[in-house]
Length: 225
Ligand code: CTP
Ligand code: CA
Image (cartoon, rainbow, N blue to C red; front, side, top):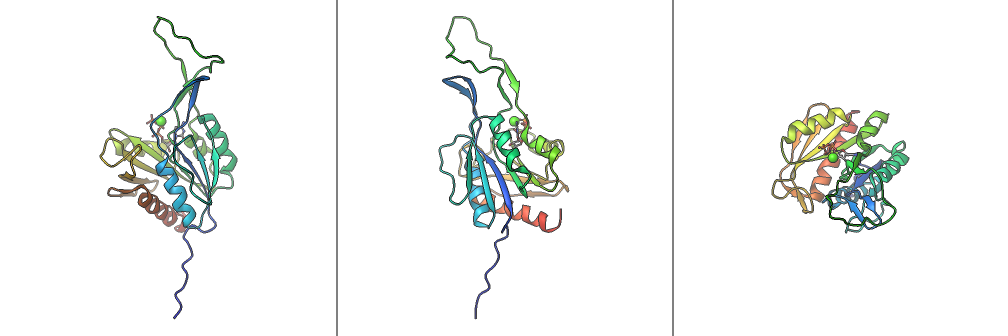
């Protein structure tokens, strides 16, 4: 007569999720950033928690509230995200990097507000650390998931990122597709796995994408990946 309770699939798993954009300061009043809304990462954090995981959400500045029952770490720059991610990496079973990390930052942060002049202005930028690549080099047992927002050649670029960053999965989306990408509540993604498997999902809510993705990750872990 009694229905058996099903164990949530991610029970006891430690998951680190990075989300949102980063902010790279130019001077006390200006910064460089991108259009990331944080919605995909926050949806994954919420669904992972519901599936029983211990979730740490490391996020750049976004307009939405963090889900309940997740450990929230607010950061601003790519360097801060790198530091925070490394701090939790060793204990993590799964790391999901939805964050749109700035690839470049101003080479110097001006102490005082920059004054305009009549000359053209050239801003000197330097590379930030590629966090996912660094994690790929350091991973021992962690399952690494990256995201790739592309505007063209999605499959080719996604597969290259999978290889180059030593990730286990890359979730790719074409941000020029209707219903996908920045700020929307839906997404259209293809999941590329290290074993050359490819899973194409139709347009669905970012929460559904989150659940489907977490199921795929769980299937991989169950197979002993
Ligand atoms: N990423 C990261 N650190 C960076 C840049 C990107 O960890 N400094 C991660 C992102 O969080 C994402 C994945 O790498 O999970 C792919 O990011 P993307 O910007 O698509 O790729 P890049 O390697 O930066 O290449 P490009 O922007 O030139 O396409
Ligand atoms: Ca990039």
